[in-house]
Length: 127
Image 1 (cartoon, one colour):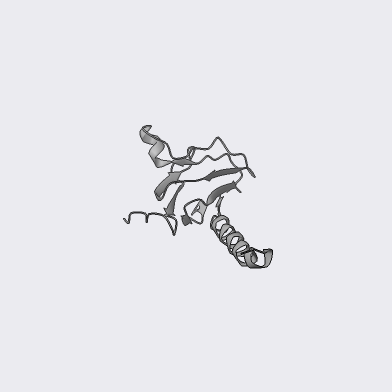
Image 2 (cartoon, one colour):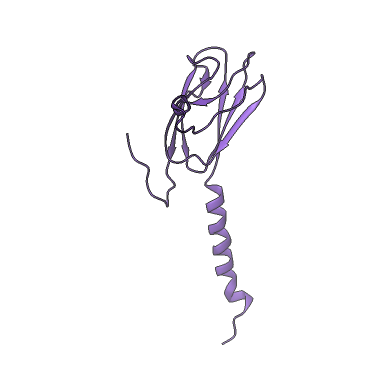
């Protein structure tokens, strides 16, 4: 029995479609840093596992991004360098979970990220 391209075409298209959906599941979450409350906009974000999270300093001063777990120094989920006005800080591949963070220079500036588990992986734990 001969296999032709015409009989394999639906299988190839299905395979390409599936691959596209896997790569399309990651997205970018943008957070802006401002001089005034709420300081981080949006203040609380939810992202899918594999998403890129990006902060942009839209203020007039230096700022930095520091996960609250860095204060214990046992581990540190993410920490930026000092960000000049207009600069960005980008992270990706955070594990599912909850991440409180703040500005390392201005600790009263606080934000929160919830990373949800992938739809075909293990679900993340609830609070």
